Amino acid sequence: MRLSDPRLQALLAIACAVVPLLFSFWLRGAIVGLPLVMFFAGVAIATTFAGHIAGIFVLAVSVVAAVMAMRAPPLNFTLGLSPNGLVFIGGYVASGLVVYLLAARQAARAAWAARQARRAAALSSALSRWLGRNARLAAGLMRTLDDVDLELLAGVARDRMLMTARVERLMRDRVVLEGADLSSVMTDLCAEIIRAERRPDLRGEITIAPMELDHEDFVRLCLVLADLLFLALREEPSSREPLRISLAVEENEAVLALTWLRSDAPSRAANAHNVMTERVAGRVARSLGGALYWSAREPGPASSALRFPVRSRRGSPG
Image (cartoon, rainbow, N blue to C red; front, side, top):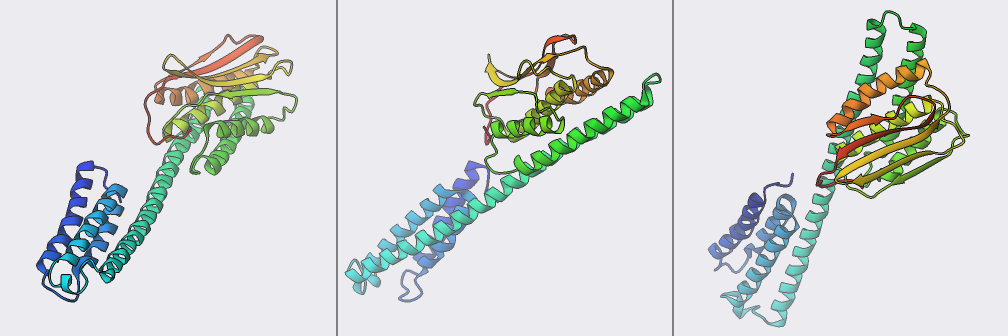
């Protein structure tokens, strides 16, 4: 695993350069068994654990050491900077480059695998919490509400768990992939949920501004979108106007907004879904440092929104 502290990286690079150099001084009088080969191990170790710059540094030191070895006794009488000596140095440089490139490739593969593992773990953790909250809330509503229609609530819970299962499957297939794009993932989420609701009459518009999010916030944002969109579709939006989804940055805040035309007052089932969305998606929104907002629950233009602060983020999908 690559060292994260720059000071440790620099220390390792220096050690990988100095140790073979000291060994070559120790065997300076040897005619055979030239100790420069130890630099190959130094290049590999420095590149793997301290990064590309450290590997190039050790390789450069080794080339300087090779040139010095050609100019010093006893090799100055046999190779020196003669054509044979230059061929030796060229071969040594080429060999060192091969070692560096192989180590860099292996380090890149290891880093990619580590990133994928972290992404998968973050996605699994977020999905597990989201699914668990949905299940616990559905069970809690059935236990605590005396005058509730159990058949209606059971249908609401079933619909919601089906939705979460579809979202989980789609996100596991897409979000763990290297270079997952926020726009394409959110578009696929919308297409999957609308298809599941069997509303081919609906038109939609989705506008996503470029922005950078770390992987955890990327996942949370997609989960909130799924919740808000599912609720909007359960409120029977009219096909006379398109359902619009937008993600933009306004005054250092990211705003995910949904607008649609509500054809009638929300049904009892839609109201139950609203309670669950408010609690589940609201908790996810708070983990982003933001909050959810809804328009009045009456026929006509309707909207919901998530607002959360935009911070400086690293290693993020856009």
